[in-house]
Image (cartoon, rainbow, N blue to C red; front, side, top):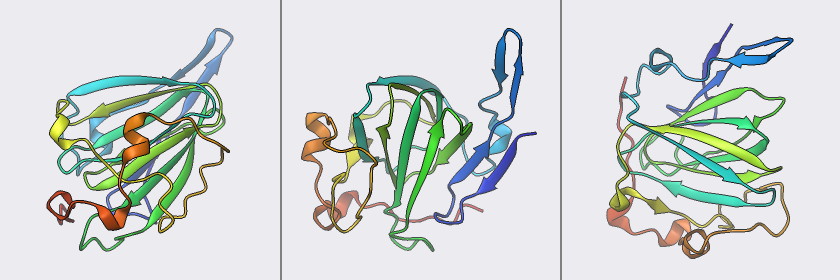
Length: 183
């Protein structure tokens, strides 16, 4: 049975423990249902990211977009950080493993920075509740000492974008997320 749980670390983040149905042919896993996320909107776009072991993506955040992540192949260390001013969990950080041996998905609300480290060659599938908008693609430094994240990999491989993200203290105040009571 699928188990849906609100995160104890970050408000509005939802972790879904998925049910695996193996047989002699392989396995079946239902990975997403709209009804699992009463605070979320309809997901309108799905994408896939294939990464080599040692890659690191993030930390990214959006002012308007929510994400739902699932790792069908390989293993990832996922890091979430609540950037939303006024949130009851403002500045909280959450780390979880997704992928092989841990069949979970995670719903990430707007304003929560998110990233992942590829602990092995891996695939991340993600659904978003608004279409790609380059003006809503924001970031914070993956190695910000204030966050103090242990990514679980030495010498990560990063994109130029992720290398250039500012520290949390240097985020543009006009692009700072605010918490909105959604219940």
